[in-house]
Image 1 (cartoon, rainbow, N blue to C red):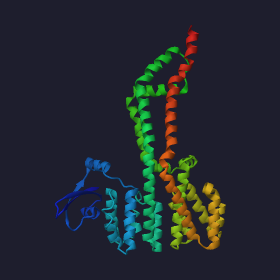
Image 2 (image 1 turned 45 degrees about the vertical axis):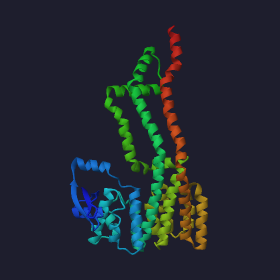
Image 3 (image 1 turned 90 degrees about the vertical axis):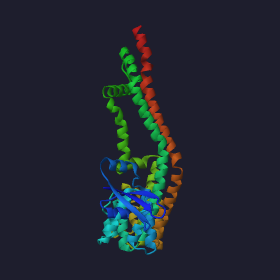
Image 4 (image 1 turned 135 degrees about the vertical axis):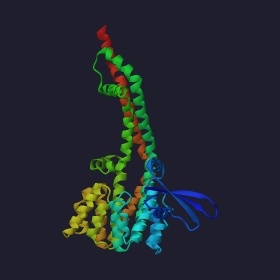
Length: 408
């Protein structure tokens, strides 16, 4: 349920509106972050109006997540109670979902829930990997540090995502324009071309047959012309689920530019999580288990699960890394050497943090040049589309002479 809170400053008379996704007016006031010098009126939005507001209002994203955890960490570091700390974040987040979540979590803590139990009701905002970190932070008395680390990670993720979105605008425009060109040609050029080629009664290339087939489909069922756009919409809206599939993650690792970013991002997340947990005196086997849950790429999830199994049968961390080095890719020998150095010097936590720092620094450098790395992909997409159209349209022309000569 969506609540619209109109907030009016009693001194200036100026008003502002805040949307809060919650079920009661009291929680709406909490989520709106109303100050003592402000008056409010609350309106419940339902039906089509609610749908339109949800479509047009800010969506929960990594910026909201970073702002939430950064502010909460700062409050906890200064010994401000978690309830007060949560209240102070209501005006830092922008989406109605986060505002409603904060109100619900405050209400849950007031009834005796732990912070981790209260946020566990929002799996879309706090996935299992993030929730595992927060639970570990609570148990180790390091919740402020965990929140700060999550905030840093979310800020970096937001930076990479923005760079990636900026770099993908051009390829997306190319794809959409290509689809539009094919649809327009299917209604105009291709029918005439099909009649011409049919009069010669000759075998057509596969690309031409595909183009003529699409033209026939769109002419007889015009509503199918919007199917590609619907497909693109569902593809991008379900990208999170698609990217979590193992074949897709394997494909990412094989792509020349993208594979490096994927591997370093997954490694940075895993080693930073493990370093943070060991620094908080979490038992190594438990730390590896939590790190496996926090790893978004299945290669590193599998790596940390197998490391935990080796530790469980009495092997050292260095021995475990040596046995599972094949999961680490090109960096395997270097990482195993660092882990061996850490085991000999007794500086495991520092070395894990150093590994994570190196990966994060490399990731930042790659993010800065991401747009240049995507340029070859754009050229490849454009080349494939133009090549297909040229092949489909001009392919039959090469056999046209033979047909004419035969008729003569």
